[in-house]
Length: 325
Image (cartoon, rainbow, N blue to C red; front, side, top):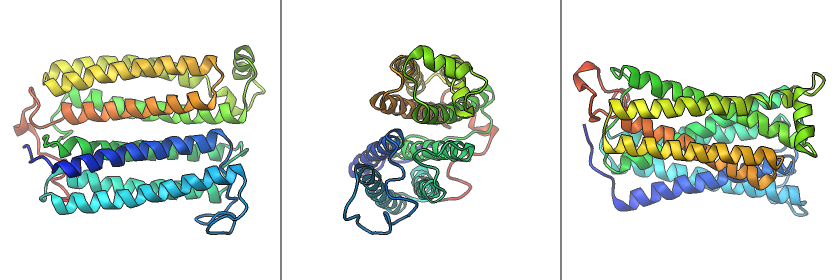
């Protein structure tokens, strides 16, 4: 079932909210990469016990800027949710996606607050910090995914369902789970690069192979290996899904996903050779978010109830129906 497209103003607004959220995410990575996470001390939401710091250091300015931009992102998520609910009839998939984008924005703030209050910032080298970074990455991906779906469904596309999809659903589910695992490994690797920088590529490899190195260093080598394996899975999944659900949107989503992932692999190699400079870490993260958005788009088009090859009589539609958001 296809629903009416949203108004042009809503479509533009939802796209701008998504773009702004990506900017906030990149600034958060800049906070971590520059070691500025403790710029406001172990205080949240205030900064060093003050609402507005009066004598801020550079680290304080970087961290406080991230808090301000994150606050605005939350306001925009609230506006997107309210507008999405008011402007769309019950059952419209935009409603559910808008609600979920607000939920994940709020949990994103809570995870960020936890990192600060637990002092999992700056030079903290504990495994607890690595775990929280993994949780942070997963929540960020879910947030970006929800906002991507708002943009996608606001164009008047059909809702999606996982039931009755056969191998199409299996391959897409494996792609989603695999990319989440890859993202977590990337977050841990980036943390290791920040806390244990190497002066040369050879030294970095020796660190990775050393039995006495910190666990965060020894785990860095897993990320490039997972990236290559995940690349093979995405290529396979995108090609098979494009054949099983041969619509123009699925083929376009498949092609774009392969192109962006190839760019991501190249960026990862450059990041490794250049010893993970801050600017390259941000490029790498942006491409990772774009890959995730590509997977979400492939899922939304490949699992659509009007996609060629899907028999709507095989299963009830899940997206948006159960909750009647």
